[in-house]
Image (cartoon, rainbow, N blue to C red; front, top):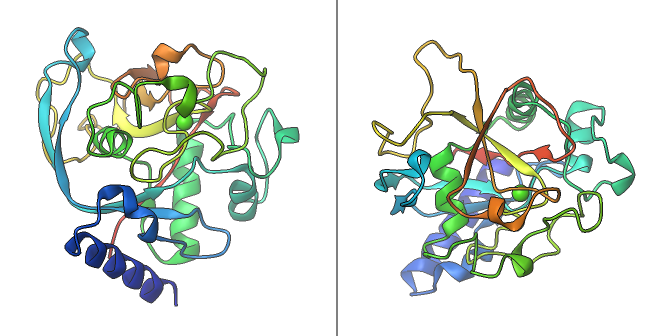
Length: 255
Ligand SMILES: [Ca+2]
């Protein structure tokens, strides 16, 4: 029973923390709700300083406190997309089932999460921007998601002319791969000029109308330079736009 399995792994993870294991040992706290569902890593509740000084859109640096949630160990793959949606929109389909699905717009990413929720009976959705940055930072203060050397952590800079299979670069301290690079990752949030007035509880910041001109992508991509893979960099884009370096990962609410 997937729900029981998830609860068991969450218990194991919490027990691990109680026994004094570091966050780096979070590999024990992962689960899959169905064979075709992404592997999800349980992140503990916590607080972190979101943003960075020096860019208007990443200031002010502000404290965010989040409840526990689970996030994909990897970007959603072409294989997972095909199993759930029955098609493959990827521009680089020849890259294979272990490559990230790309060429999906924000609406399509949301639709994948909706289908996955219906299939598993659990709530999947896009990460909020705060959840994404919390997961990327993994309790540390590095410039990039898991360290200070982007070459060890991320595919970037158009070195191979295509996205790469997930999970081949070094993971961060929570066992999450490719948070920086490979494909940009859609989040739930609308683009704002700064963090003035941003939620402090980890929820997504959306327009009250439910509409917004730009949704936030995070993490940079195989195509762009290493500076775009920084932990705090924000990139707003038309939610209807698709590109061969736009993908996503999902969050699963814990129940
Ligand atoms: Ca990525």
